[in-house]
Each structure stands twice: as structure tokens, then as C-alpha cells.
Length: 127
Image 1 (spheres, rainbow, N blue to C red):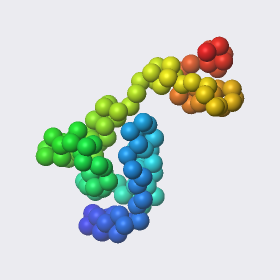
Image 2 (cartoon, rainbow, N blue to C red):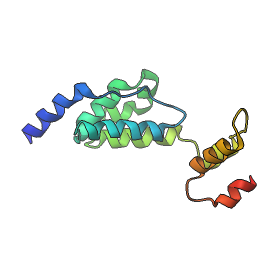
Image 3 (tube, rainbow, N blue to C red):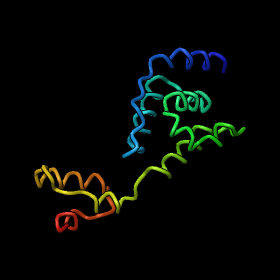
């Protein structure tokens, strides 16, 4: 266990986490967790410390009660809180998409990405 902790501590320096992406926090967390996997960081406590150190204060304020708690799952709790606060519903993301400067094929791809597998391709084409 101690060896694992020391190894994870060494790997912290190599992590490069982008600024929090408020528009798509689920993608941001995917990137963060990919960095943790690459660096072989699995301890919840280290993940949490790194998360808090990378967030702007205005976002840390939203998880301040978790920061001060005695929970053993602070990273998971913080992730769930931030996702619940900032992740838009799928319906809102779909209805907010406009063609703008995109080609129709680009719009179709964006709709497919947002809709995931819950909506048929024929319905997306009708939209």
C-alpha cells in the first residue's frame, strides 16, 4: 500500500488537467480520469486533492461542504455534485443546436453526439 501511494505521488507531477469546462463537464471529467489512469492514480484522496487544486474558487465554492466533510469518497461526491450542477439535460442540448456556419453533415454528427443512442437516426434527420 505504501509503495502504491509513493508511486501515485510521483505520477502527480505528470498530470496535465485542462481548465474546468463548464459547458460539458462530463467530457472534462472523462479527460481528468484519463489522466489519472495514464498516471496510475487510483486513490480517491489523491484524485480529490488534485481536483480541488485545479478548480477555480467559484467552482470549489459549490463543493465546499464536501471539502470540509470527513467522507472517504470526496472525489466521487465532488464529481457528482459538479455534474448535477453544470451538466445540461440532453433535451436542452438538442434543442439548443443551430445550423449556424455548420454544414448539414456537421449538424447531423453533432446531433448524434448529443442524442447518444436513445434517439433513432431517422428522427434526428427529421429534426
